[in-house]
Image (tube, rainbow, N blue to C red; front, side, top):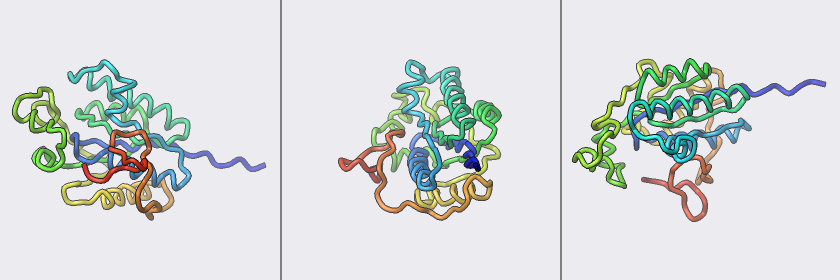
Length: 211
């Protein structure tokens, strides 16, 4: 009897400032992979902090601990054939590189948007405004550093690309790297919320558009 071919696990690691669009693209990728019968999970930065990393603050040590915990869980999942989408801010380059070495099959996607763009157009809670005014401290990209990747597998620029265009670039990259067979988008229209990210959800249970 022929044994079915086991799925190869890998991690897609979205990094970038808060509000850059990491969770939006991650949620869309999740549905595309599910449509390909790929076993997949999402480790979202805010959701992990509410559960696995509850009690951690925002010092460099605590931020690194949070990212290493996400990396550890991603390693367990990927080595058991589960594709793992990670979308924490992960501001420190050295820590991301440690996680890359830990996981092995690692696709780093830098989701680029500037502080100015996010503060002006993607800041519904006013957190950037407060950070820029000095009312909030230790805020990544304002008074705490964000270190962009030097050699990511992909850069998407959400200031000039729509989420659908950014997703297509991710799918193209995964095909080029041999992780998926084709990059044609399979999912159109409203998408059921995965429950794995902090994106807003409509009354119908779909991912809400906009911010």
